[in-house]
Amino acid sequence: MKDKDGRVIGASKIARNITERLYAQRALRESESRLQAAVDLVGLSVYSWDLSAGTVEWDERTKAIWGLPPEAEVDLALARSAIHPDDLPRLDASIARANDLQGAGIFHVEFRVIGISDGLERWVSSCGKTTFVDGKARGGRWSRSRDHPGEARRDASARKRSAAAGRRRSREARPLCMESANQ
Image (cartoon, rainbow, N blue to C red):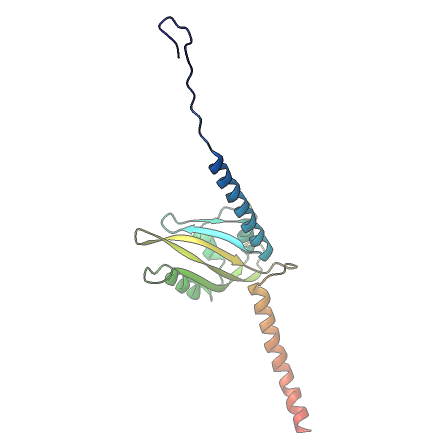
């Protein structure tokens, strides 16, 4: 502050204690780090969608499930184009249930994806929760898992292959069991 002659006669300073904010930011970073470690450990891919805007956000793992490179641009039409046609009705029904205001907004479905660039069929287990705003389904945050060779985790492709192999072995063993029983 200066007087009428321009001489400094005082100073003013405002200080704010931001310790709590810094602690909160550090706690948030640590929490995000633990969550990312868990996501990586079980091989989840995380994605979200906004129904009103018709947009989706995919991480690199989700893009890989669809047989896309990490830099690929995605939208709902592209996502649907890779869903196995036999699985679309079940997927659509699950989405409709998740978007029902009378329900819990929970989404869980297993379906096949045919990779866009590699043509590989993958079983996907997808689950999440719809976000409702002003009485309307707006989208939500979801996760997917799929076949990641060498990773220790639950995965839909491996379960489906294992179940199919078990049924095949059972069918092959039946005639042998009947032969030995008749002898």
